[in-house]
Length: 275
Ligand SMILES: C[S@@+](CC[C@H](N)C(=O)[O-])C[C@H]1O[C@@H](n2cnc3c(N)ncnc32)[C@H](O)[C@@H]1O
Image (cartoon, rainbow, N blue to C red; front, side):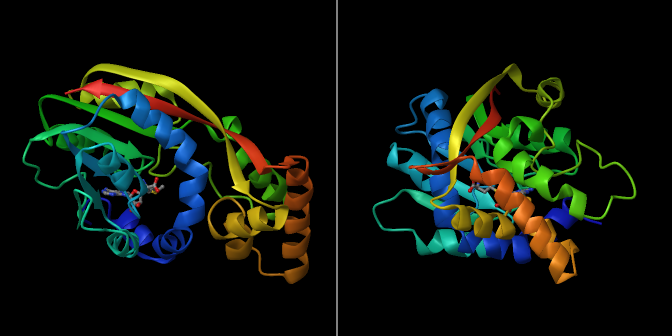
């Protein structure tokens, strides 16, 4: 088995296609978090920046707009195809299909950045040690990862509502297994980065209220494609049970509807470190 084989398969399968298809909505939803992360990453004009797991390119383009030369790498062909469609002559961006954990880097980047693209490595210490080789001696790392699901109502509210309808897993999942919440424990994140050779590791909470849909129907439809409600379609076969599960999700979410849309809180870590 090669490094990150399961994730490569995952992000090149339905997940990658769904993300590519839904990128406009995802980018609108996640922009408040990544805009703040970029503000806190400091000035980037004139720098060479590596955007890890840059997906459909939203942050790659946003960093380039701040005056940097940006290289977005990702393992997902469908998401990179979406990114390529958005390139114009004015932007200093390029994209490659590459596994950030094992790619051989040239060591001339001043910043390695990621919005939720670094929680999927089979061997996080080895992967971050490899990312460190992408940095120049004064280089730095800034990334966003999710805090625990229970601190992220935008996920935990609908997930909790449909839970009683889903099959009970045969064993408790490993909370550090590759996936969106692998880095939810702050001490673990610090330990991984320190073991990978990074210095001055800082892991600060960053919170925002996310708009997960303009209407309740939008939000439910979106979350059945990406997010906790997708398990309802994947794992429940009986139509009547599916309907009951979706009704439960609707009831749980409707209290969050406001004039600005369906808005729920999110919590992540803003992680910064020096090479
Ligand atoms: C949750 S998505 C985030 C995408 C994008 N950063 C965004 O915020 O829209 C995670 C991304 O990480 C990418 N990814 C996962 N493992 C990777 C690896 N080993 N090397 C490069 N990219 C990876 C996935 O293909 C996917 O595009």
